[in-house]
Amino acid sequence: MNKFNLSSLIRDNILNLDPYISARTEHHKEKNSIFLDANENSFGSPLSFLNSYNRYPDPLQKELKEKISDLKNVSPSQVFLGNGSDEIIDLIYRIFSRPKIDHSIIFPPTYGMYEVSGNIHEVDVIKIFLTEENYQLDLKKIEKIVNTHSKIIFICSPNNPTGNDINREDIENIIKKFTGIVVLDEAYIDFSNQKSLSKEIDKYPNLIILQTLSKSWGLAGLRIGIAIASEAIIQWMNKVKHPYNINLISQKIAIKALENKDLFFFHLKNILSEREYMQESLKKISIIKKVYPSSANFLLAKINFSSKNLYQYLMKKKIVVRDRSKIILCKNCLRITIGTHEENEYLINQIQEYSTKK
Image 1 (spheres, rainbow, N blue to C red):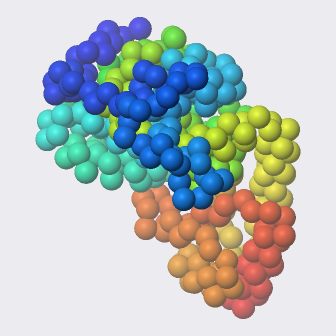
Image 2: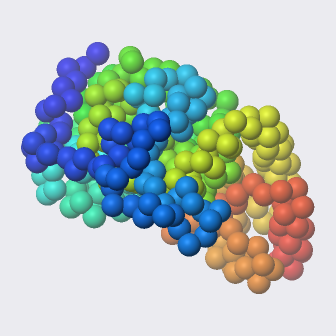
């Protein structure tokens, strides 16, 4: 194991931070109490059926974290919830990277917010491209780049926009050797045969795993991102985050959704079945040069000509996909989310029709 020292990675101003303590941090679930501490409207909202929402939400989302910890088989103290994973990425930069001094490392093509958030915080973002043949990590290049100013490494697996799993041994190799923070983004892990590394949190104190309720759980509108990490890292996240970052409605709906696992697995099975249908159907169309292997809920398809033309044609047919052709190693590629069978069938028919005109 590497010589990982959490305190040495945290910015000095964060180490000395005196955090804001909200009125409900210590007494959110006091029973039979009269709450006169948070300057709320004690008479309720104008709409009687919204009366419970005149109170601030639990700032640490204890009930929701209990549900998630049961689902992920980790301790609630190892779970942090953000307003989407984007808030968590922002927090990681704020806590661990000094502006204009440190840098992060990313592996394009990958999720764009790793770079955007770094730019916002004036942290250099070093890019080491994935291998062109199969979108995997280049360990030799990574080893050459890493130095004392390397604070964060972002790895997305399954990767977005390519859809493939990153080799597990390579990921663990980096975690073991790197003395900074490794962020493993597992937003699409439920669609993959690869197991989550969340069970290894106790083994890897420098690992932060990102997951979400937006993808497989179908709750993108709630904006609930999940970080699973050591209790020490989670405590720092709780110290730096905004007081009430997850609203009460989102917490309540998410709790109800997590209690309905049967429907979750039913939808997951359908998505995996439709992914296979889409892969096979797209491969049969002459203008599709390649459909990349996917462990996510989308496919990356390479077109024989400018993907922009097909993208615009599909837009006219009221089908919105993502043109990824401007991203490195994704020339003439469209990213296509797996829809319902009716949506997928309509898409395939429209691409086939366009193909016959070429």
